[in-house]
Amino acid sequence: MRVETATEPGDPERPNEDFVAVALPASGQGGVLVLLDGVTPHPEGTGCVHGVPWFVARLGGALLELSGSQRDMTLRDCLGEAIARTARQHAEGCELSHPHTPQATVVAVRWNRDVVEHLVLSDSVLLIEDTTGVVQAVVDDRLDRLPEPVPALRAAVRALPRGSAERAGARARYVRAVEALRNAEGGFFTAAADPSVRARAVCGSTPRARVRAVAALTDGASRLVEVFHDHDWSGAFALLRKEGPRSLITRVRAAESADPRGEAFPRGKRHDDATAILAEL
Image 1 (cartoon, rainbow, N blue to C red):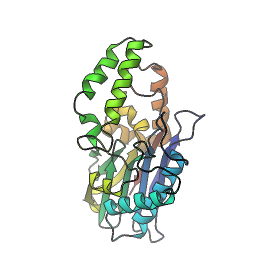
Image 2 (cartoon, helix red, strand yellow):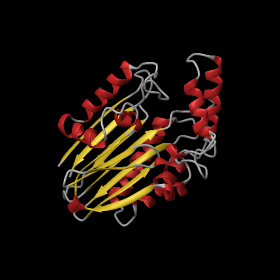
Image 3 (cartoon, one colour):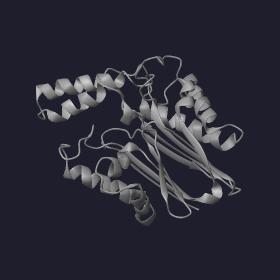
Image 4 (tube, one colour):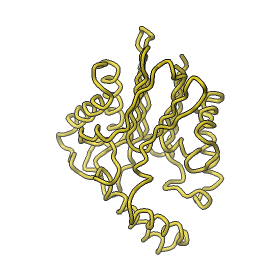
């Protein structure tokens, strides 16, 4: 088995808010991987004294431990219990009902000799390569399907001159519209303090005999495909296998640096935390 990971902060002056970990039992008959992308703290605060890196480390660690040790629990149930456990750890002194309480996207994969299970919540991406070389992208695309006025507001922002007061005002309205749909019906969902979000995750399973490898990318790494269109998912997987996750992130950084103002390839941040993992089973 080959497992390779790489991660890089979007800003070297800020903590990396991504999390990635793998557990491989001594028996060699299975394993678990977990990838989280912490949501950057809101300017108005989160109601939490600990911070997003603290949150993703505890949520990711709990999910890894539960998924690996509690094989009778589904990945959905493991996520719900991991969220509840993490919430208990900072219920004292933190306002967990705050709409911007620390939260994260989630990818989890668990395998044994019979089956490969997966879970995806929000906009990190899971790639599954079958034994014929076909790559399937497992995505939670709710962020791409937000209702009006979000698409119209996004288009309005991009149409206005950069640096203008009009663009700044339009962007503020766009951000408010998106935030109103966070963890709300008709919107999109992240892992925060409510265990019931487990029901919103995209889950499934594949016979182990049909899976050659899996990979997971936070949205800072999946930009190579989703923003810069430098590869399709199959091409990105081939790059991961041939050159490794570090090379993929290096290519993302090169594309970002070639378009620093986001004029050719609009995006929310010039650089974002980027994490990738490849597991050849």
